[in-house]
Image (cartoon, rainbow, N blue to C red):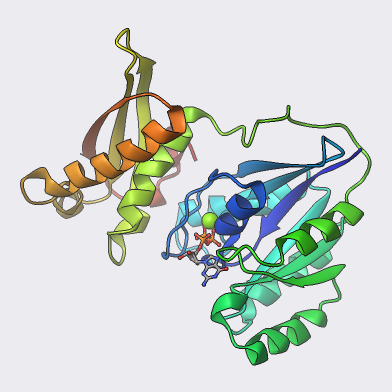
Length: 292
Ligand SMILES: Nc1nc2c(ncn2[C@@H]2O[C@H](COP(=O)(O)OP(=O)(O)OP(=O)(O)O)[C@@H](O)[C@H]2O)c(=O)[nH]1
Ligand SMILES: [Mg+2]
């Protein structure tokens, strides 16, 4: 059978995580309109046929010019995951112009030993003209294939998968059938809570928020108990995250709980607390402790 790891690379917010979810057919990675949503490597598995082929898509943080120790770690994570990849999927946003950020990634990918496929995403929101211009510009980089797609409308995905399948080698199935991701439950739970916050926080605050699940246990009553700590960087941010009379924390908790219950298929009790860890994004020691 054909099988391989495909690392997804691109600038922040181009739709990498949305694309992984669409390709896999399950939500394995959180998404948001804010750049720098993804902070870890997340693997999503696609079985094609039964099981004649398996593609393991590796979602990565958006590559950007790092301004913090965290940013620096995230960029290294992306290029590190390319080292084990059979192929790369370079995602561009058709509604934006290609810029120096894309060119830097393209240069990096030119040095990658495996084949690269370019997905021009968000074609549903771009004009024909924009898509053609982007395909032309990206075409100069001379990669293996170029496929226009829309991750939200799920168009072009079959073409994309067909291209990837011609490029990955013969190999074993890396994951059993039915396994969409190897992401630990605690990480997924923390990410779902963060996603609900990203949808409502403004400006710098999304970057200042980190969530760690401290405890997760199935209670005798059948309820899954999840305790998580929300770390912010400044005392003023603590107030925003909690909200007036605890309203924001309560609303976010309720939204996250509904999704967690669907995912785990059990009632969930979500216990959230907020702590200040000054400038955690800039401190290597804190990054270690927060699991980056
Ligand atoms: N119109 C349109 N919007 C899209 C499409 N794909 C993704 N988006 C939107 O683009 C935004 C960013 O999507 P993400 O999947 O979080 O982007 P990302 O590349 O993973 O971002 P980072 O994790 O920050 O690097 C979200 O608001 C998505 O809904 C698409 O095909 N069409
Ligand atoms: Mg992402």
